[in-house]
Length: 219
Image (cartoon, rainbow, N blue to C red; front, top):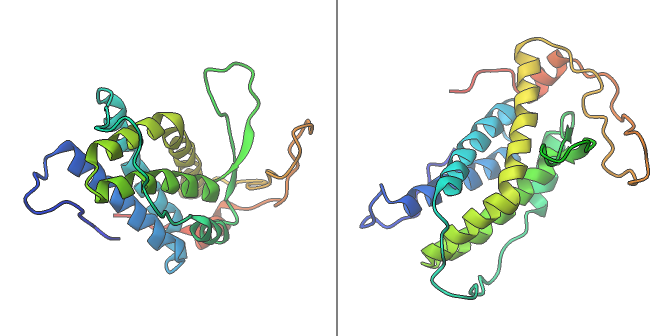
């Protein structure tokens, strides 16, 4: 995986903005590499590692005081590539375990779990991070940090956290040799009026997932 560095050599590597940007760029590059599918057996372990590291950057942004951009209105970032191809590649790569169940807000009582997809989640996170990266690369550091902090609270922090739990669950079942029955049967295309979520996939054993998605060690 790439250890890309965006900052100029004269910038202090201990600077908060530089460190956050480096962590985000590393995540963007790493997930794009995983999505190519060259190492399918390592996909889930690598994604678990990368999402964990990204959430460290998110935690630092969340703990930081409110960041105020230099300009009152957001400058036009210009062209931003969409993440549709990456989303589709990840969906194919993660097909046996892509769909999972998530509670959107743990502080809202009596909320039923909803189906979600790891591939959709990662693509949405990447779209948020890329938007801020456009500003950072254009030299609008405060704008980039403001956007990353704001979108961490409003979207990608929650999304990445849910994804991390799903990835952790897959690997935990594999490493502990615990069968995952009806693993990815949640149907995200069902209407809101359905009382139950039908299952698509049937029984998927942990050993099968381990063979396809990586039961080997990372690091």
